[in-house]
Amino acid sequence: MKKIASLFLVTTLLSLSTLTAFAADKANPSDVANVKATALDGGVKLTWDKATDDVGVAGYQVHYGTSSVSKQGQDYDKTVDVKNVLEYSVTALTNETKYYFSVTAYDAAGNESGSWAKEISITPAKASGSPAVDKTAPKVADAKVINNQEVQIVFSEPVVLPKSNAQDAFDIEDQDKFEPLLVTGATMDAKDVSGATVVLSTSKQKANAQYKVTVGIDIKDKTGNPIVSGTSDTALFKGSATDKPVEDTKGPSVVKVESVDNTHLIVNFDKIIVLSIDPSEDFAITVEGNDKKKLDVLGVKLGTNSANKEDASAIITTSPQELVKYNVKVVNVKDDKGNKITEKSSGSFQGVAAVVPPTGGDDKDLIPPKDVANFIANKVLKGKQYTVTLNWKIPDENKDTKEQLIYKSTDKGTKFDKEASVAADKTNYKVENLDPGEYWFKITEKDNAGNESKGIITKIILSKTGPEMIGLVAFSLFAGRIVARRKNKK
Image (cartoon, rainbow, N blue to C red; front, side):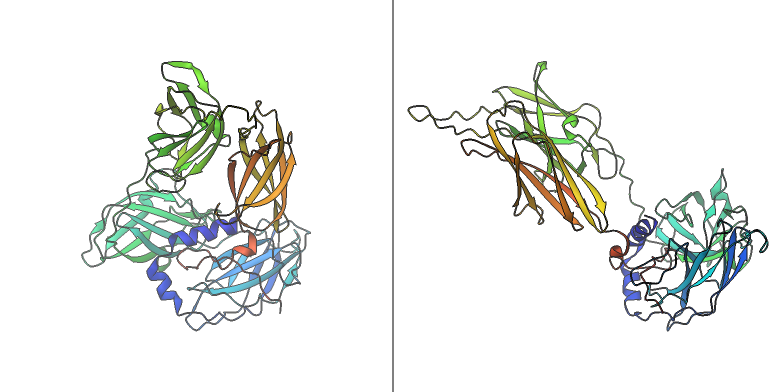
């Protein structure tokens, strides 16, 4: 999971200019040679020779675990980005346990050594050496402006901020006019799971002004080593002309409610929404003037709103409506930023009468069964493929259902192919051996007369994991993280 989180961090931070600058550099650094290890009490000290690169090596990664990596496609248990050093101590290891180590180099464009360094193994032991104590002071690796009021400071290792007034540990000065830039806040970057990145809030910067940030000794690594004054505690950045985005703290609002037919309606929102695990509990539909008379919510799915914004409406299946006005109260729904809808957010619509089948000598049943409710998909990863379990609730009034039909779409609902036919009383079904991707499932009810309901849709995204994520993103030195790829064994 750390690797995946690191991928998303890098993707978010890369700018177009960075991608353009790195596009020309496609050469990999050389493989790391001469890796040596010294056993410590609860740790291992590693050293290696400097790698080469056509532009320049930006840093190294130490890979290690309790199993040897000897086959293509295997990987080590852990990977640590140690920045641009030739010596590193791995701590918090278990004595009398054999560990395997390798090292790779990377450059500023994210190119990585084509092969792991020759693997070495060693066993930490209490009697073998001094306790594994981290005595290396953290360094400022990079400073990257985010906007004209935020700067990202990347350190050589995870750091800890002072518990109070953390901003006082940072000074920023205009290098041309020797004027200070006020630092108003300092927080750990939640997107960097390694804990090596701090985001500073500043007063408004001057566009293209050259600033120098200096970090004080109150900034320490996780073992208490403070940063050392000198060249390792400073970094330069240019002031940005981009305004800081206004933080979105407003929850979604109901724009309008539209009735589709006797058992369906659409609630339109002003932005993308996220439904609860049981979306039927997100909506309460009552007759206007009589809160005790309700419509049952039998199913909810996301749809496009009246402004053609995807996932900004809720398509609701209800019990049969009457020719009266209904009120819809929405609760629990959030937007994609996590902002919850305001209390008592509501709308109203006019109920639609049911279509009456023709009367006369023909007694043929023309009314399809009701669609199921609470149609939900859950996933389980088995090896490299997924199993999706579909669950639903059958309406009590479906007395003549003959079978339930399950359909699957891999093109976001443009085309559905029949997946299975299940018994009329079945309330779950497993779809196995699915590759990563986005899947839409639909279930319909079919009665003895051949009438088939319109169907309820649920969708699920099966994420790519592990090595399959490699190649989906670019890499950046300032992000302070390079994701390890599968290596060819030497």
